[in-house]
Amino acid sequence: MSNQNFITVHPFALDHSTAGRVLFASEVGGVHVSRIEFEPGFELGHHYHKETLVTCYTGIGSLCVVFEDVVTKAQQEIRMDAGGCAIQIPTHVAFTMKSIGSSTASLVLFSNKKLNTDDNYIYEVTPPSDQTSTP
Amino acid sequence: MAIQNMKNPESDHIFCFKEDSSKEGRTLSHVQVGGVFMSRLVIDPGVVTGNYFYTNTHVLMSIESGTVVARFEHVHTKEKRELQLKPGEELVEIPKKVASATKNIGNEKAVIVFFSDKPLRTSEAFHYKVF
Image (cartoon, rainbow over all chains, first blue to last red):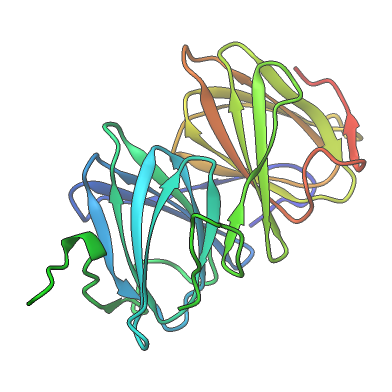
């Protein structure tokens, strides 16, 4: 419960369930604030949301992110550096995010629903650089 | 595809931070997404930032890297609190009329992130020394 007259300290709930990343989550007034720490080289994602709207940016380090529209299959590969740009991830856009630096990277997020719940739909995103053309 | 080309970044879904390095020892970057203002403050070791309160802005803050001491004081009741903040430990909700200041007590740059319903450091920010 927030104290409207003075500060309120909301602890982050930690999720270590996946090796290579830690998810920190908290909620204030219906807004879910999260951060994800990536070990170097760790990749997550390969899913999309149908209802969860996520806005995120890189807190520290660098991430390579690939988005794919699950309907049109259009792809976009981008590099997200700390302090660069924030991105709103629309629903029905799948993504994969990989830490590309030599030290821990973090992603700062806020969303209308809690992350890592039953609104994750598995979708394999193949980065353009990994795709091989057939003759 | 809704997400546009990052080489020409600004689009309906991409919002680039604007940087303010006007004060020595800290860089404040901010971006607005919908009605939410996201800010990222990088502080050099030993530097104190803040010493402001807002009359109509609600702020959330947490630490992304480094170790920071934050002090808070309600400008009317004078209630005070000091916290040592580290990455991933807590999200601090700061209501209006609570002044705050942060000091990087580590040996490397510290990064603090903020979410707010109005932009930080505006005409609605009033100086109030707590650190």
